[in-house]
View 1 (cartoon, rainbow, N blue to C red):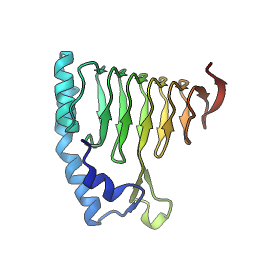
View 2: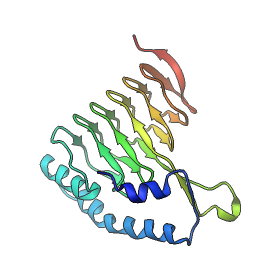
View 3: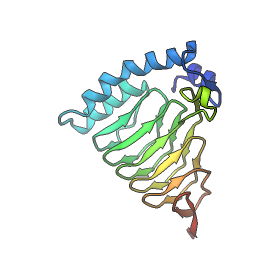
View 4: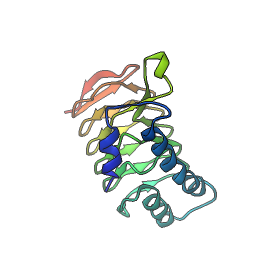
Length: 187
């Protein structure tokens, strides 16, 4: 189960640099950096990749999940994998705000899911605000897509390569562009 205590304390709140919460986040983050680096160096059999991801996330991961290395995460403890998920190479999860992947999700190479943003106020700019990302069942995220904090991608939706998703994507549509917009409905 995702570390609900920390996630509940940070979601949609301003976290100012130097605050106790900011420092706690960075201490926990540092604990996973070695594990992620070890995962991304050398060859690992599929079952070893799953075992390493379970250690990184603290979650049980179904053997039907496939992650092509390298895989990057800055925090690691706020990722939830469904079943039969495929992540291609060089996917990056900035997951402090929580990333939830439902069953049968496909994510293309170089995709970035970013649950953290910096504060607008120049005085607080080194601080952060976080919100979750949810990718619903059977969604397909194309190559080099960027999905920003607070976004839900709907069931069966397709996000075209190189899109930047700044708001929710409905079920059964294709979105493209920056910012992403609906270009087609899927029958």
